[in-house]
Each structure stands twice: as structure tokens, then as C-alpha cells.
Image (cartoon, rainbow, N blue to C red; front, side):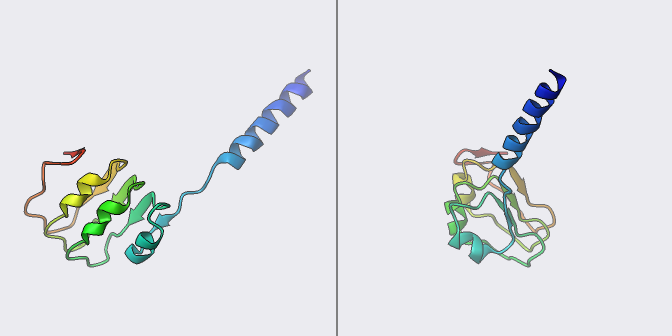
Length: 107
């Protein structure tokens, strides 16, 4: 009986691991725009961005966006269209103001 239970848990664990899909963290904005429906994680930190294109709001499945350590002075209001966004890093930029509310995104 113990062997049967062990085999059951082993196969359940294997099945669960097969269902896990590794999520790619994109680090290139052009590549992210080319694969917009696949992008969940986008790390653009330390890439010298002074501004972001408004098309950033088209990455509808984006959950994590790291814009830290760039030279941003503003963030496009289209960031507010990212309904699935859960994490937004803006540290190390030159932001004078940031919209307190933009779309469904509230600080």
C-alpha cells in the first residue's frame, strides 16, 4: 500500500512539473514588441532609456516591468493600460512627477 501511494505521488509530481512553463524575461524592447502577446516579464533596467514609446501599453500580458536605473524623466500614460501589471520598478530615474492614477493603475 505504501508503494502504491508513493507511486501515485511520484506521478502527480511529474505531471505538475510538466505543466510548469518557464516564463522568459525579455530584456530587449524591440524583441518584446515583436512578441507582444508572449511578454510577461520585461527587464529594461540600466539600458539608458530617456523615454519609452507609447506602444509599451500594448504589452497587455505584462505582469512585471523593471525600468530601474535609466534616465527617464516621464512615464507614458499608456502604462495605465497594462491591466495585468503587478510589479513596476522605477528606481534610479529622474522622474519629477508620476501620474497618481492612470487607467487601472493606481499608486
